[in-house]
Image 1 (cartoon, rainbow, N blue to C red):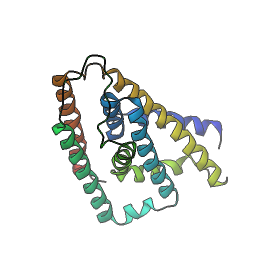
Image 2: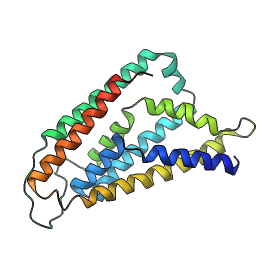
Image 3: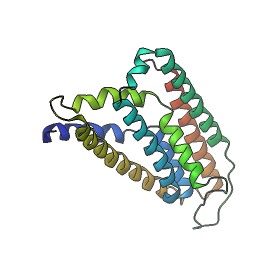
Image 4: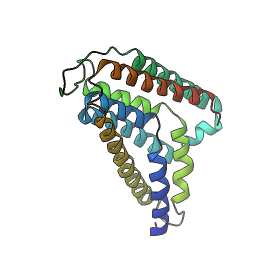
Length: 209
């Protein structure tokens, strides 16, 4: 892989990863509620799902969704339903006034494993990510060179960029935590993030490949 190709991939991936979406919203809201440490578990779940999808797409299985659009539609609607469910949960989340300057901590049921699962489900809920990987990655792989080393470089680059943006969103969310100690602010935040998840669900349900 030549340097020009890598820089082009880097630039395009940097912009795409920076774009707000369900993953970034989840990480930012998790960090705002419970701190960066809790957000890291959600990051790990998001990244695990994306890496699996990238590898599956590299194996050529992403083309199956193009060949069988009914499968794609079923996955798309299931993903939309999950995001809508998550949005309703955020909207209805109970709030309470916190003591000033006391760090917000996750409730007992929000374990690291639960946050990891939620991140994986949010990232994996959109089958278009697989189609994006199947259509995007091959454009940067030269047929006259071994594919595996090239794919490894692209995957490592994607991981570094994506995780860097995760932390940028997480630290941004953490800055909000001092304001979320007021119940009325937390309630408004829950409804804004819940509405955003429902909005993403609506877009996913309406979009056509």
